[in-house]
Length: 192
Image (cartoon, rainbow, N blue to C red; front, side, top):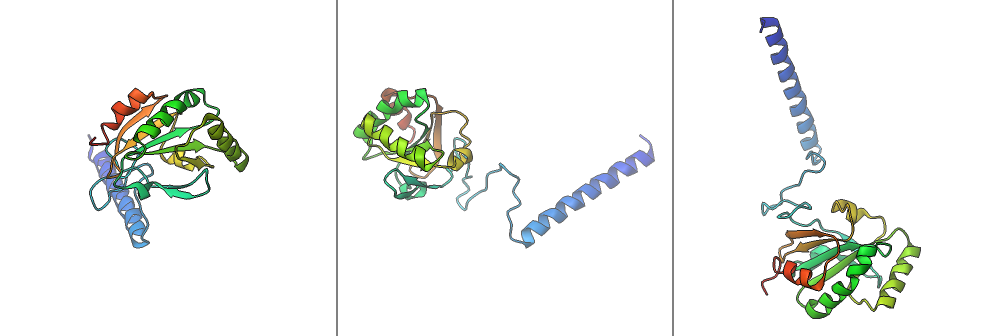
């Protein structure tokens, strides 16, 4: 390699490094997070927040069908089955009786949260009618802008996240679940 080409490469690397350091320092000075999009941020505990197994489940607050605001973090200390679904989804409708049966059997020890992907207040009323008609009594939260589903990177429904007492995702299941599948899956988040 000739000396001129080598010099150009070295100068280019130095310039790129200086630009990266400058951008990082500006972000730090302004107190902004300069973590690249999609990267998880470490908490004081060393556990990263994210949507993969082994990461702390991102907190959210949604309105339940009864009108009460519910936050995931309010269930810390209790295992959570977090299910994303929609009334128009045949596999979701297929698994609703299993979720109800599981809730009736284990709902005191394991929190069930079913997040409905709802587009409007009108569809929220439809969700309430659907639950009443099916006799479903487990807690349903309304993700009216699908923002929580997007934050959890839900690509297909139903998708179920199994979250342990510390708020760590221990398993993710895509597709309808049976009572037997739920019982087997919760062993990863429960010591019972």
